[in-house]
Image (cartoon, rainbow, N blue to C red):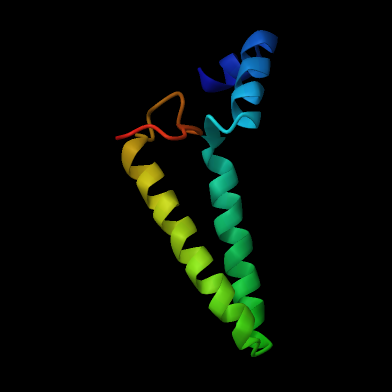
Length: 90
């Protein structure tokens, strides 16, 4: 159903506008950020770049918390699994 809605031009434009305004976020973007930050953290460990470790560690921790909350509040069976409203009190 989600992909069906995305393929609708009007719905697609609406979702894009909401994302640009920061009202919703695509959960896939969060997962990509987590993976990217993990890779950068591993590279910093290998290169013994301790300043970068201090910067990336908390960032990764926060992203993982967001990812965890997202998985908790969005059931995997939801047709809107990849869309997370921003600023909503759960």
